[in-house]
Image 1 (cartoon, one colour):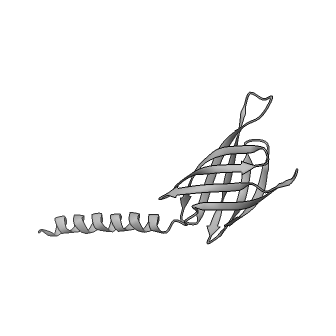
Image 2 (image 1 turned 120 degrees about the vertical axis):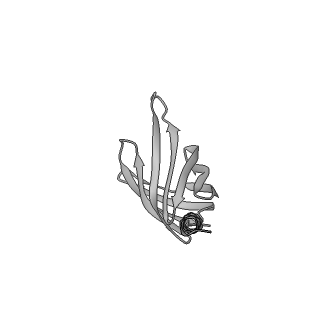
Image 3 (image 1 turned 90 degrees about the horizontal axis):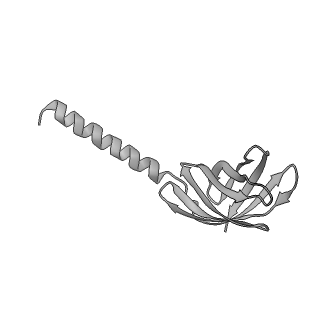
Length: 126
């Protein structure tokens, strides 16, 4: 095998190892999370029931007003989850986006309610 071909195989193998390592480094957030959400208006205690396939996350958001389907992703310790809710008497839906970091059984960060404002959250995995 000549040097150029061997170099290409080494480069390809290194790239595959790097891809595998980054996926393996994603935090596991699958499970049920009890969340405390604080906004300027109030404090609430939603629950997140999450499933994870690699870096892709799906699940269900539940609070006193109902449920919504979650989608998102994990990249290392960084997480982004979002869902859309129907606002009664309003023709526009509201997209809610959680962004933050995960460390073990704790997740924390910010919540954005489209153009309506922001809040902060802390979640604990059951």
